Image (cartoon, rainbow over all chains, first blue to last red; front, top):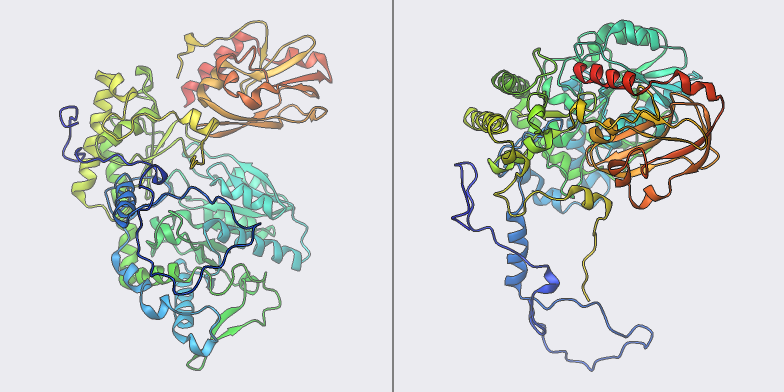
Length: 492
Length: 136
């Protein structure tokens, strides 16, 4: 193995171990535990329940431990290295979040305990809702939604409830071309059809375009600011004022909040509801099967429509209030994804006013990368960006090197690839979001790797076309994987 | 990606700005151009309308899913679907391998056969692709 490897300092090869499927391992009779001899006679199973069971493998504890540990070494995460996956805000998650979420009082709290026995949990919910509203400059927030897209649905359900309550006939929603894919899906779930809003030449919304598309049956605008190109929507306040005047409301997609904490006042901007992706902005774990949370913050207009019940403070006691006549109702059982919210709470309290610095550094890092790479890669919108920057493969395409090849080659150089082919509005996009948690040395390492990729593309495109070569498995057949996925193992 | 001069742009079909082609005559077939299949990459799924569906020029009638993205199929003409290419359900790669032949998507009965004349011929379409590529 070692003589085949041409390692760079960032990507060492070595003890990458193979691992069989669990049911290909073990030996009949092997076990991970010793069960005491039974002191009573065995009772036989009813005949209709007896028979051959699944072919479970007989494994020792060590085999199981090594199996999962080896699989984990094939993984890559924010604890392993820089993860510049644009639009995903893969910041490092401080370990204090985990320590707080694992406090025994939180771990062992039963969801059906009465309010008087869960004052600590209720206090956390009450305070985090207050902080999340304050961070974006809105009136109140609700922690119930169980993920970002759920928060989005919550926001649009509130807008829809508002229009129904006010007997406004609304059937459409304005949707910029840079919208996240979930936005039109959410609008459709709420019964709205979409009106696509094209971008101006600088990649942002233009007042005149939106004004032309605004009609009396438009329920509102779903807008991400900064948008998915990483650009700040400068004309938004004017656009929002016009939409408000004509009876529409504004859904702010909070996917990119990491760029503007403490800098942009969404309340003053006129946003009526915004969701948080706590896994992006507030450093809770991304995916991986863990639960998420997608709190929403609202303006005065939508406050009465927030999901319920809500935690209220009565003197020095916290209580549940269910007397919410206009509320859209409950969106999640019990307290929402409570222990994810504990992590977000720990992060917000750890940083406090420094949240503003987090945003500043996220923006600085993205602009630094943009400036360092723009001579080597095509930059479709050459202007100051927010927390992410978008390149394309246009400079490499004449050598038959695609965005995908660039992404794959980065793996050989020890970096997780950026987001590719998104946003759709940019042809063959390469979207880089370094986040604030990467230090200058790591960012410089990434830049050096990207510049080497650009050089390789010029001098020997085949290096990129065949990449990755240093990984455990090489270029995967993504087409066959998508057309004929094999999703089950054969245990027989 | 293919260079402009590598594109296969047959002259016996007409093209629209959204990169669909239409074959004149009966049956009138609709598919996507070599440029479109090359830009989308390997297709993994083709969502087609049902036989009998009414197509409206400029409106979506299905979707193409590739390893890169999901794109709408926009109808180049007004008409009624008389057949869909069932083979694409099992092998969407036909669109990549043979976009003008085995990779056709739907057959339609045109509302107005003269509508085809308003579409681009191969030379005009090539110029359109060139212009669009320059804008990217």
